[in-house]
Amino acid sequence: MTELGGHAIFLDSRTSQFALTDFGDEIRAVMRYGDILMFRALKAADVQQAASYNQIPVIDACSEKYHPCQALGDILTMIEHSGSINKIGKIAWLGIQNNVSNTLKLACAKLGIKMNFISPEQDAASIDKELDKQAEQIGNIKKITDLKTALAGVSYVHTDTWMNMEFFENGNVKPEFKKEYERRVNIFTPYQLSAKIIDKFSPKAKTMHCMPCHIGYEITRDAVDHRNSIIFDQAENRLHVQKAIILWLLGKKSNPIL
Image 1 (cartoon, one colour):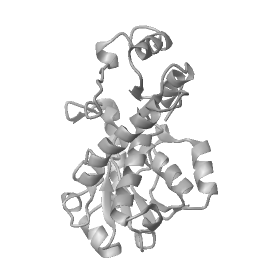
Image 2: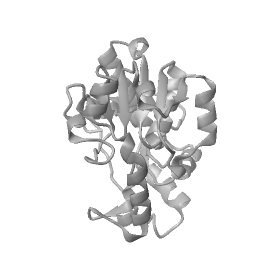
Image 3: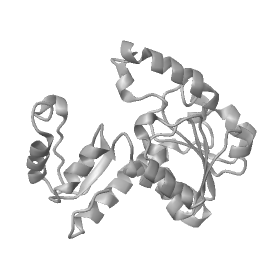
Image 4: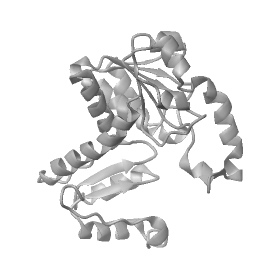
């Protein structure tokens, strides 16, 4: 917003009245104070409710099911490094299926980009059966358990954290999440993105991570610093694609949701 000459007002539930009163009342009042609402929410249903009031454009900045700005930034990054959208080729997702992979999967399916999933499970909170069905019916999405087969000939390898933010407090695992934390470490460690995996199975593939990177969990330090890593280009492109989204939404006469 600053680069575009605008101003952003930041609000969160901990320092406002959202935790104490009716969400619908509060969000309708908040939308009176701006031209766009960018909403990072625990529940996608809250984003959809805000958009249903049809006051101003609403952006899902990240919810438990979707992360559209990240997916668009990732597509932009792959276009830049491939030369065009038609040259992206085949990509892979390594690790847990979640809100980020949901939205990237749908984007790839619609754009004709083939995508291999190497994943033992999907985060239960992120499951959207309708989205899965829509993406998989197109035929560009495959689930493959064998690393060698899944990574053969891919142009990009994506990963994301196995751990949800609510698992931690002050850098430590909350007691109520310790069992799930340990379970995920055991299940997902074989799917860790490392330089060894890239060099062995897909030495020409670019490595991508939406950040923050959790070193020693879903990714290793040598994968972040790998010669094929474009993680920081990917991070920068969130800025550019979100400026584009804002300009597009401000130019629309209706009030869409993204």
